[in-house]
Amino acid sequence: MFEKKIKKVLLIEDDPAMLKILQSHFPGENTEFSIAILPDEGIRKVGESLPDLVILDMMLPGKSGLEILNTIRANSKTKKIPVLVLSIVSEPNTIAKAKKLGIIDYIIKGTISLDELEKRIKDALQ
Image (cartoon, rainbow, N blue to C red; front, side, top):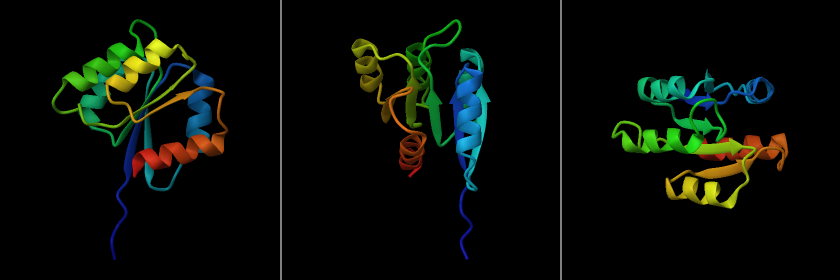
């Protein structure tokens, strides 16, 4: 019998309400969530844990999500890690820059249901 691999998801998010929603709605038996609230903590955790997916906010204290994404993509160990952006930022220029940096999805907070968000996270982990 094959043992299912635990998927590691790193949330780089500073909004306590969003963290609570994500952690409570997506516990998944084969998914392990870790959190980074500060940008530098997120960058460090990506490099240390090499998660299967990073869920990244664009608005963080001290650094933008684009700066974090640039750092992840510049590192040979982390450049291929899938990144899903979940942010309130809906500015087309930011979305275009994130897509150019190879994100797998850009979701604007509040525009989709939790069920749809769950589906997109599961799809990203496949």
